[in-house]
Image 1 (cartoon, rainbow, N blue to C red):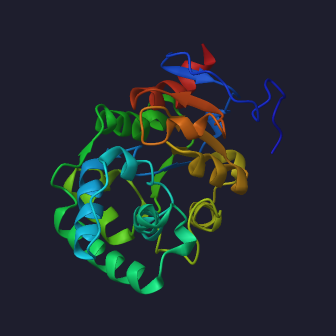
Image 2: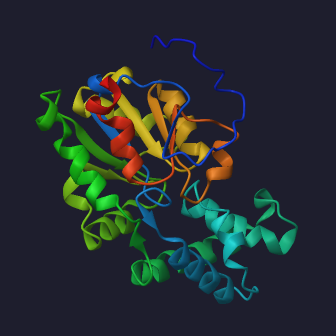
Amino acid sequence: MLRLPTTDRSTPFPYTGNMVQVLYPIPVEALKLLVFDLDGTLIDSAQDLCNSVNAALDHVGLAALPDPVIASFVGNGAPMLVRRALACESGGDPAQVEEDLQARAYHFFLDYYREHKLDFTYAYEGVLEALAALKSLHDAHGGTPRVMAVLTNKPVRPAKGICAGLGLADYFLHIYGGDSFATKKPDPEGLRSLMDEVGARPEETVMVGDSKVDVQVARNAGVWSVGCAFGFGPQNLMETPPDILVDSAAGWVEALSPLKTSQ
């Protein structure tokens, strides 16, 4: 993909507080596929995830962890979330967690989370309005029809249940989870599969997410990236800067509107 060298994206940048910070301009008029992360991007699921992890720790006889600690583990899928929580008891190395302990805690976590996934989880302010606006942009400006999808490392069953429960599901052609493919983000398998289904080239695709995992999968697939500074992992975006950074869901419309960029 041809990109004009406007800035060094490998250099960490200070977040200025602007609604939209462009590090690298995206040719938004050509976009066909908008792919969203779920946790920390479309929804704030932190409390339900923390409660479910602590329930699993209690089930295997371990002490509860503070919510901010658990929230910092989110992003690489449910198995790694649980493994990292278990590792806190043994010095912090997830690789050292016994497989039997991991299996018992993970299965309990899944069962508990399926029942409690919508206790406190909600869509971020402005998400539904932003999705509606993005869906209609191609009609308003006579551009290429856009398809939207979800690609999350969360297991697909609760991901679909949450999207349906919060009124998000109808905006997306597909909702794919961490168990939908053989690999998880940042491996590009899932993103490339979506591109193949839609017939979108890398330069016609953007990945929207809140952590470096989302930016990494975008880079691995050769697509554009929009980072969300309001999610679970904005500090990670300092390590792997996206092409555009926003501080609210409304920023998606600002960043991805052909009308805005042409002014």
